[in-house]
Image 1: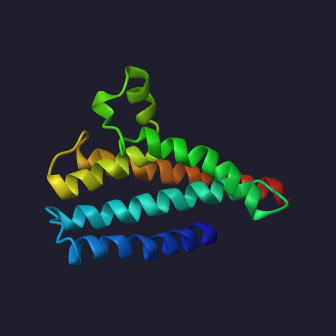
Image 2: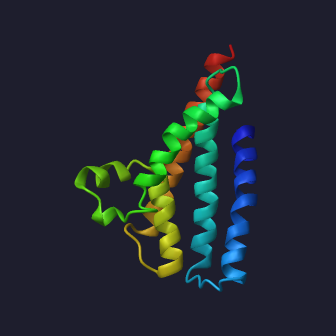
Length: 148
């Protein structure tokens, strides 16, 4: 849990820099600021727990963990609707997007800025919490298994 919390705090410290730039320099309007804050917190913790899950497997160097993590994390980002709207993806892409945690974080962020979303914001929150629990519980199990 400590690794997840440290990754979460690091992620939060980084995310507020572009947010501040967007608000101060570009005067980007935010319709639902609390939703934006909640989405940033949940997606940061979700990615932190995903990182903890990959770090649970014993490796020689941190580079090995980062390589494995990026092999999973980057496709998740591309299928999440950040670059291509989910509605215009092929049916298979739309189905895969449903199992991508960034899909729900991205949906909440879009809602915070535009008031429009693919899913109800409460569903986004529930799905992110489910992913966080799955990643954290699995990581805890693997840490115990590999460190006995």
